[in-house]
Amino acid sequence: MQYRTLGRTEQRVSEIGFGAWAIGESAWGSQKESDSIDALHKAIDMGVTFIDTAQGYGDGKSERLIAQVLKERREKIMVATKTPPAPGPWPPSPYCDMSDRYSEAYLRHNIEERLRNLDTDCIDLLQLHTWTRAWNKNPKPFEILKKLQREGKIRYIGISTPEQDQNAVIDLMRAGYLDTVQVIYNIFEQEPAAELLPVARELNVGVIVRVVFDEGALTGKFSKTTVFPNNDFRSRYFADDRMERTVNRVEKIKTDIKDSGFTMPQAAIKFALAHNAVSTVITGIRTVEQAQANTAVSDLPDLPAETLAKLRTHAWLRGVWYAGK
Image (cartoon, rainbow, N blue to C red; front, side, top):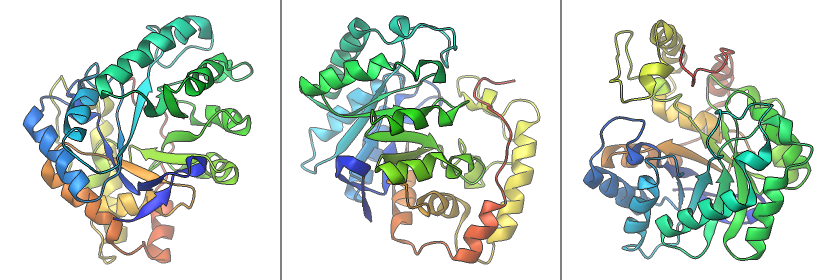
């Protein structure tokens, strides 16, 4: 496992992190707790020192499983979690009042819940789970988080970009509110390379890459007839003709990398790691096999320049799919 510095936090973290959404079970279909626990242990055995979770991952279930596992480990693991806005539109509407969605009373209550679930006195990295550009001129929630930071409840402050407007966080970075940003960046979604990632690099803001496999599509394991159960959010993400369109594009990527020596999952991870702003890539992991395969990519050679150039041609401007069709 290779390690990188998480921006101005100056923390050294594994360049492959553990994405803990699926072990919360809420959106990815059924998941055995024993498989989740085994996967966490295996990832740590393989050198993972960064785990990302959230309240929304099984209403805290993912956090509680992580706390359970870390009680049995001696390694120093950095755990990042996320606080969502109070109930309302997701992502927040431009007409939402931030004092309704991220009030001080709400943030304090929610963060106390995060602390209990993670069984800790201080959260390593607290990220707001979404945002709206409408709040950028007076982002009071971050002033509240800085107050909680001074009180010793939070070590570092970050944000997970809103899917439909990832560049909304650039002004927040420039204003100095953020230690980290969590961003969607993959072979299909390359727009962050235009401005978001260079600004993060310039300001020494740590970058956590999520959705590196485009919810599994960029592993190359789906076919045009792949169907997900109703309790798996991907049944909506890949609704109607989306799976066929995606697979057609993935097949073209496979052609471009066939002589590179990299599998699709390996190429997908290495593509994200190739950008010098990226600190860690949090791959979704729910089994021992996935933990072993994903973490092993860190020790592979970098993508050759020729292969990286080919992958850059597969950027796909398709809009936002998370709301379904």
